[in-house]
Length: 397
Ligand code: GLA
Image (cartoon, rainbow, N blue to C red):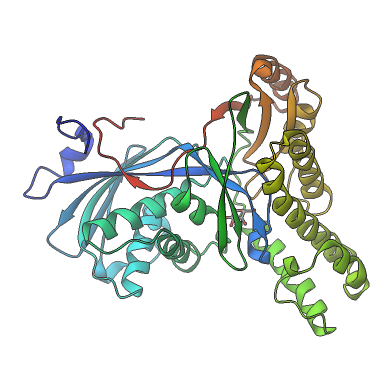
C-alpha cells in the first residue's frame, strides 16, 4: 500500500452512504479496444484486444444486510436492489449491470455481502469501448474482494459475461469481459474464444500512437443487428454440420477448408458472413505474430483488410465508420485503421506514427464534420492493466 494519506472518497457518495464502521475501498476496471478479430469470438475464433487506460472506478462500502445500492456520477437516482428484487428492470438503467453481477455471483453459490456502490467512469458510452464490461468486471472483482473469495481473473470474466448475457440479456461473446479482467499494461491479449487459451503479446508504442476515433454517431440499439449476425452464423454452421463437415464452430475452418466447403452454404448472404469470420480469424491469429516480430506495416494492412471485410462481407460498419477508416487510410503516417467493437456506430482505431498525429486529426475531422454535421472525438490510448484495487490516493477521472 503506497503512501499514508487517506483514500479519496467522492463527497457525492458520502451524502447517501455516510461513514459507518465499514471502510470504503476503491477498484478500477478498464475499457478495451480490439486491434483485430471482430465478430470472431462467438464463432470460437481468435481476438486481439487490449485494455485501455480509461475505465470505471468503483467506491464500495460493505453493508450488514442483503441490499445493494448503486449510484453514479452521471445519474441523479440511487438504485436499490435486494435479494428479492434481483431481476432485470429496464428503469434501473446502468444499475442492471452491477445488479446482474450480484445475481451471477449468487447463482454460483457465493455468499456475497450487501454493499453501497458508487461508479465514476471515463469510457464514453456507446463508443464501442466496452463501458458495460468494465462496470461488470469491476463490480465482480470488488464484491469478491469484500467477501474474501479467491479471485481467478478468467473466472471473474466468465461471471461478468454471465451477468451480461443471462441477466441483462445481451448475447455478446467473451472478448470484452476477458480483456477487462486480464488486460496487461503495454500488451494485448491473444485469446482463442473457442478454447479460452490466451497469451499476452507486447506492443511497442514508443513511436506509434493508438488513436481511438469516436464517430459520435447518435446511439442506436445495436443489440438486434448483433443478434441477427449471430443467428446467420449459427445457420451457416448448421448447414455445414448437416452436410457432415466436422466442426463445432465456424472459426474451426481455415481459409482453405472454407474454400473447399463453401458450396455447402447456399445462401450468398451467409457465404459472405462466413468469408468474414474465416478471414478475420486468420488475421487475428497472424496479427499476434506480426506484433511479436514488430511488423507494424503488415499489421496495419491487416487492419484495413479487416475493416473492408466488416464493411463488405459482414456489413456492420455504416457510413460514419467507413468515412473515418477510409479517410485514415489516405493519411501519410497512418499504418492502418478499422472499426473496433460490435460496429454499427462507435469508434474506429488507428495506428499512427506519433509525428503525424496532428495532421491525422485535422485531415479526418473537417470532411467528417462537413458530411455528417458533427465532429468525431479523438483519444490517444495507452494499453493498461486489467481490473485491480486502487491503493494510491485520488483516482479522480
Ligand atoms: C461486442 C461484443 C463482443 C464481440 C464484439 C465484436 O463488443 O460484446 O463479444 O462479439 O462485439 O467483435
